[in-house]
Image (cartoon, one colour):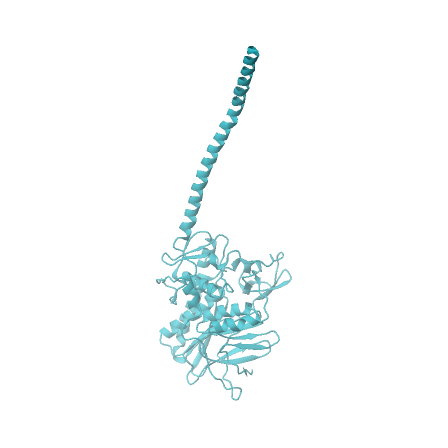
Length: 310
Length: 121
C-alpha cells in the first residue's frame, strides 16, 4: 500500500489486527492519538482480556451491570444493528464462537483446536433480545447464560470514532483502516478519490472511494480446524455454527464503518436471491465475491473493474 | 314384634352412628387438606408476586434496541439519549451522506496505487 502524494501512511497493531492511518504530511503526528484511541477501546471491549469491561459484563450475566459510556454505546449500537438486520448480525454469539474453538485471540489460536464434536446446529438461546439496556442509569442486563462478543462492530466503531476525531481536529483528508475495515474523510491532495484495493480469490481490483467506508467479511482469514472439521469466525445466529455461504467474501460500502461491517456480515449469510433486495432496501453498495473468482456488484458498487497490477 | 322393631331401629341407629363416626375422620382430613391447599396457594401466589417483582425490577427501565450516537473518541462519559427500538432499526443504516464512488479510469488509464485494502478481516 502507498500513501497518496503529500500524505504519509503509518501502521500499528491493536484489537487483534493491523491498523493503518493515512494523514497529510504536516499532520502525521496525529497518528499517535489514533493508536491511543484503539488501545483504549481494546482495553475496554476485548473479550480476550479477563480484566476488560466487556469480560466483566459477561461475567455479570443475570444482573444489571453499570457500564461506562463507551461500553454502553457500543452494546446499544450492536443491539440496534441486530434489530436492523433481523438478527442476521447478533452480538450474543460469544458462547457459539467459543464452542467453535475461537476461545482465545486469533494470534494464539492453534491451526487445529482440540475438543469434542460441535453441539450441532441450533438457534441462539435467546439472541440479542436477551440484552436489556437502561439508558438513564446506563446499565446493561444480560439474561443468565448470555455472552456478548463485540469484535467486528467495535472495530468499525473505533474507525468511525477515529475519523470523527481527526475531522474535528481540522484534518482535511484522512483514511483510517483496521484489518480491512476502513473509512475516509476528505480527498487526497489533487485526487478525485481514494484508491482502495479489493482482493478477490483470483485478482485484486481498485475501487475509487470518494466518501464513506468499506468493510469486507469472508472466510479467507480467521479460519481453523475444530476436531478435524473446518471452522471460521463468521457465526450464523440461526444455527450458532460457522456460516455456510455461497460467497467467499462480501465487501460493502456505506456511510460509516459500523454499517459497512454489520452489512457485510449479514450479506455473507444471505442467499444469492436475497442479497440484492436486502442491500437496495438499506441503500448499501456491495460486491459479492465467489470462490471461483466471480463477482456480483450490488447497489451503487462500481461496475467497472480496474485490476491492480503489482 | 315391637321389640323386634325397636331392636331393628336401634341397629339402624347404631349403623348410622357408626357410619357417621367412620365418615367424620375423612371429612376432617379433607378439611385439613383443603386448608393446606389454601395455604399453599397463598404462598404460591406470594412467591409468584415476589418472582415477578424481581424480574420486573431487573427489567424496569431496561429496553431492548436502545441506541445512541456520538460516543466520544476517548470513551469519556457522555449523556446517552434514549431511543425506542423501532427507531433504532430505522436509523442504524440511515447515516447521513452514504457512500460515494468515483468514476475511475474505466480501464483506460493508470490506476493510482492503493492507499489501503479492504481485505477480509
